[in-house]
Image 1: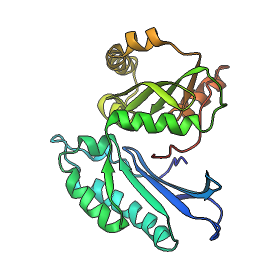
Image 2: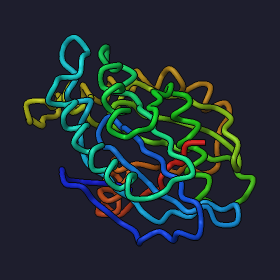
Image 3: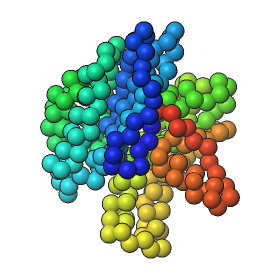
Length: 254
C-alpha cells in the first residue's frame, strides 16, 4: 500500500458483507495509509488499500510543532478515510501514529481532531513498537522457516531495524533517520552535490553505530526491506545490475 503522489490511491475490491471487516490506519511521517481486511476462518485477507502522501514530518517547524498547513493535509486525508469507514461495518479499527507525531510538541492537537474525524482513538506508538509491528507484517509474507532475518523499513521520519525468527522479533530498534527528515536536512534546497551526500552518509553512519555491534553479534541469514524508499533503492540497484528483495505488504497492528 504505497503512494507516490499527492492524490488518494485506492486498490482492492468491494468487501463481502458475510465476513467481519477490520481496518488499520497508519499515520506515517511521509504518507497516511489505510488497509481494510476481511477475517476469514481466522485468516486476515486484505481487500482494500488506500494511501496518500501527506508529508507530516515536513510540516514540523523549528520548534518541533506541526504547522497548521501540515495538519490540514492530514485532516483532509483522514476525512477521505472516514467516508469509507462510515459506509461499512467494522469489527475493529486501529489507528496508530509514528515518528512525526512522536516528535511533534503539539501532537495532542492533531490527535484530538483526528479522533473526531475518524470516530476512533488514535494511538501514538513508540519506535520499538513500530519496529515490532513492521516485523510481524513482513513475517506474514515470508516463507515459514527458522532462518533468522533482518527486516529494514525506511520511513519518513525514522528507520526500523528488526532481527527475528519466524513470527518472533529478537532485536528491535528505531533510529532517528528517514527519507523526509534527511531530505529536509541535507537536500532542502534541492541541490545535489558530493558534499551533501557525504554529510548525509556520515549522519546515517553515526546513527547505525548505535546498533552495529549488537546486530552483528546476533547476525542474520536473510535481509528483507519493507517501504517505499526500499522499493526505490531496489529499482536503482536493479537498473545497475543488482537488487534487493522487499515486502510490499502492509504491516498489521496487533
